Every structure is written in C-alpha cells, then in structure tokens.
Length: 244
Image 1 (spheres, rainbow, N blue to C red):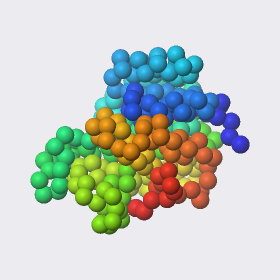
Image 2: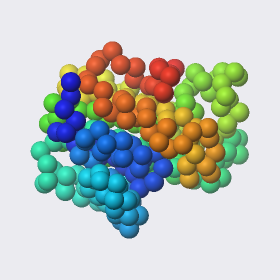
Image 3: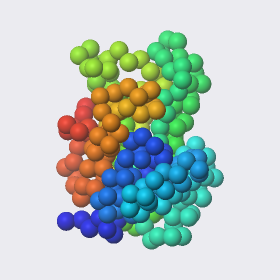
Image 4: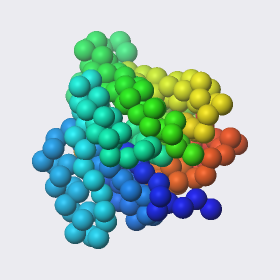
C-alpha cells in the first residue's frame, strides 16, 4: 500500500472550486500538497482556510499562461523538495462568448486553447524533471466528457447540444496530451490520465450542475492516489472509462 504521508502534489488553479477540493482531499489523505493559484491573495486565503481545518498545505504562485511564473514555481519546488509525485492540471476556463463553430470568435478559441491545453502542457513540461524522480509519478489532467469526440457525435449524449467550440476543442486537445505523454513516458514510473469530474457547480459554469465541488473532486483524487497500474483506463469519470 502506498504511504501517502511521503507523497507530494501540486494542484493548479486550486484556490476555489474543484481544485480547492482536490487539495483538501489529498491533504486529508496525508499528501503534502502545494496549492497553485494565479492570484497570490486568493491562494494564500485558501491555504489559510485549510490551515484552520488542521490541514498542512503550501501556497505557490502559478499562472499557467505565464512562462516566467511556471519556471519560478518549478525552480522553487525543486529547491525545496527532491521530487514531485502528483501533478493535477486543474486550472481551466470557459471563455465568455464561446459558441458553435459557425459563429464563435477566433480569439475565444485561442484563449480557451491557451489555458486549457497549452497551459497544462507547459506546466507538465516544467514539472517533468521532478516527476521523473518519483518512484510512482502521476499526472492527472482535469478534462471533460465534452472533450470526447465519440460522445460529441452521439445524439443520445446529454451534452450533445452543448456547442462550445473553444472549450470542447481545448479539452479534446488536453486528452490528446494525455494519450501522447502517457505513450512517451511508458518506460518510466510516470502514469498520465484524463478525468472528467462531471457537471459540478462552480464559477466555471455559473454554478450549474448536479454535484458539489467535493463530489467533483472525488474521481480526480481517486486516480491521483491510485498506485501505478498500466491497466487503468486513461480517460475516466466516477463511473469508469469514457470513450475518446
């Protein structure tokens, strides 16, 4: 059984919503967690709230769209610890004005991809040297069923009518990152997975959804804590494997 008391994690976009709950649940499991947030004041406030609950969590300023911020975060972590066991690429956005492909503004699509895909790629690249030093490293990409090509083409899918060209494409691209990075790292101790937290009530979607953030965090945390296992489904939600 894995000893979580000796594991370390970094969660991006974690000062609120699902990210904050992932930090809380990892810390409750004994993992030493760094809460990454773009806004230092909000990030430190979140850490303070968790500290009041008796949870030991560290804050690190991290803007996933800023190369200097990413480099500084990686350097700070490397200076303070030997390795990183878990990276949760949680930070993401839904850009105002996102719409169907025929009408969406191209800048909306660019901004979606910049955060939801390129940001996760940049952070993963920066943290890989630390993850390679882990006995069982894990990258968990917070994706969405809206990034599934198979489901988007299925009229019976509950999200079939959700036409968000920027968001859906960015999550499909994030899934491609999972597939390719997992294959590239197949001869290492690092496992890469995508996970859909489900439609969760957060600021991202105007608090629409059928679950609370603590429920949305459950599947990502389960996959983050699972021992390395090559048989694990690469893209999952709380009910099991999802189609690409």
